[in-house]
Length: 86
Image (cartoon, rainbow, N blue to C red):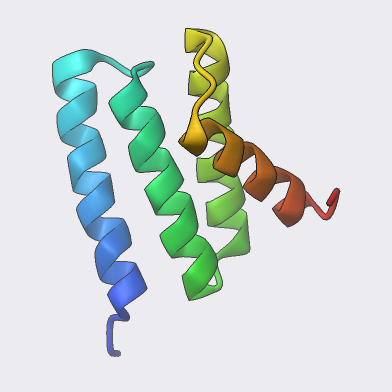
């Protein structure tokens, strides 16, 4: 079975996520960014459930940290789109 570029990207982002979690803990801005990128790659590969899970985690971290930026806005928009709330 051929691995798509999106699947390769998810694997790389997930490896980075492990490193950031190990170094910084679970709830940090770098993890939020990685979850956003994972959500985008999973969405593009057709894994809607996985994309929604990662986008929700991104939003959760940003909310906990009280950060509103480009990624938090995009992740929030993605959650609404994937949930069909647009």
